[in-house]
Amino acid sequence: MRIAIFDFDGTIADSGPTIMGSARETLLRLGHPVPDEDRLRLFVGPPLLTGITEVLDVPAERADEFRVTYRAIYTERMTEAVIYPGIPELLAELRAAGWVLGVASSKREDLVARILHAKELAAPFEVIAGADLLDRHASKAWVLGRALAALATRGLDTRGALLVGDRRHDVDGAAEHGIRTIFARWGYGTEAEAAGAWAIADSPVEVAALLERASVAPDDGSAEGAD
Image (cartoon, rainbow, N blue to C red):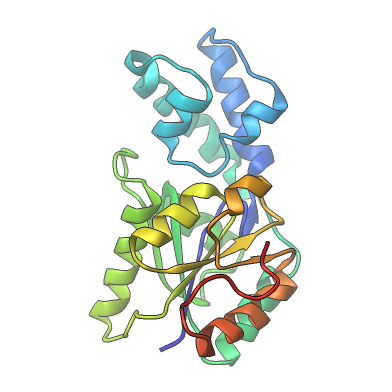
């Protein structure tokens, strides 16, 4: 069975402006220093609580206060995120070619589903997996495991599945499940974060061909041309 699972922020949707803007407003409301733009970019993608304490340097004792305030601000503007050009066409092409598609995101699962439905982009996906309501279980390995388990309960053989994602935690989380990653260079990750990915795609247009190559290639290292 040919299965491709996609990260959401920075892979399907350019959520950066809404995420960074919400984080900036939350920090201002709570009287916490606001980091520069480069630092804020690192907040896009990782599990929320990890980003709060490790990227924004919010003290652990105030992390839940930030989470609640941030969620209230973010949910009002989350559907402003723009779907990357080429993603709808890619998903349609993959479905037509017989691929089973899923989403595994460190964003709260209900929010991912709401955005996809708002963008009329939920239909291609067999499963949507994300963080729990309190953002306690949000690592890429955890949400990817949920996606794989959901597919397995439908009788699908998940061996050989691939992940498409744009951050280091995508690559690492996939590796925990023995899954190869196609690194989405159009997202928010740095070149260094692509280390360990099976292949790198500069745009969604390149993903279909890489997935096809992966489906017939042994899992024996990086694809030719990956850097």
